[in-house]
Length: 287
Ligand SMILES: [Zn+2]
Image 1 (cartoon, rainbow, N blue to C red):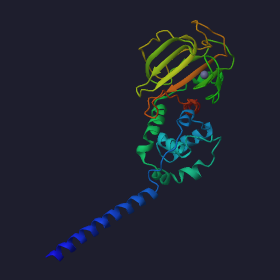
Image 2: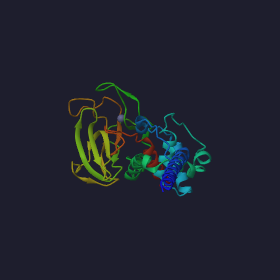
Image 3: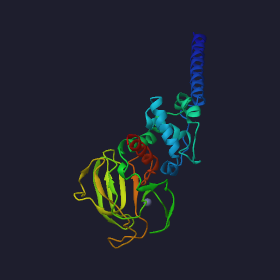
Image 4: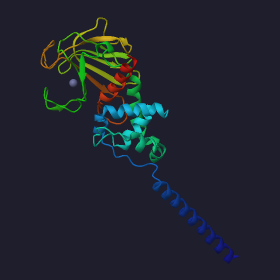
């Protein structure tokens, strides 16, 4: 009797040890399979989004060719490149190196880990329906990726937006349209931004337009706007404590994007440039 009890306990210990070892083996296989690859992404890279306009347009074309959601494709591409930590000038091998291995790459990450990045990209991409200047003025403006340039007014800081310049440098002649649907949540004088307008979209993202020469009539705080509504006219207001200061820099529109996101506890601004290139391309193809 005693002997029987002893061997039963021994069997129990054996089974418990065996199941523990099996669990450990499964866990090791899971870890080495790569699923759940840890993300080491600097939030400043997410903000700066230093992707070339060619690469972003390639991603757009490939998303259509392979019928993959653009925001998903862009997010995985950005995550794989640590949000362009080593600025990508022009990656001509996106199709060979990235799309062909897309399923494998997707399998490397837990979607939960990249969800907030995806939401960030998707919401901005969904909100922005139009370029802020109508296609008929396409020869009147110019812009490049001006994120990160040094600014000194009001203390040394970096440029957290995208500037669209009037080629003729004449204030008040180019109408500015809202890129998104939303509600005007800020309007009036701001020392750095001059006459500015802030539009909050239903996603919670905030779109900031600065240095207007004047506002469009009827544009008031609390008013709803649709993408395409004129909100004001390009100018050179700002850089002065005194309301109405103009002429401190060339005539241009400053665009800022401050998304609602869980990625940062602090206010996060994201480079509008890639998103502007996307909607501008659509405008051009329709012309
Ligand atoms: Zn600016």
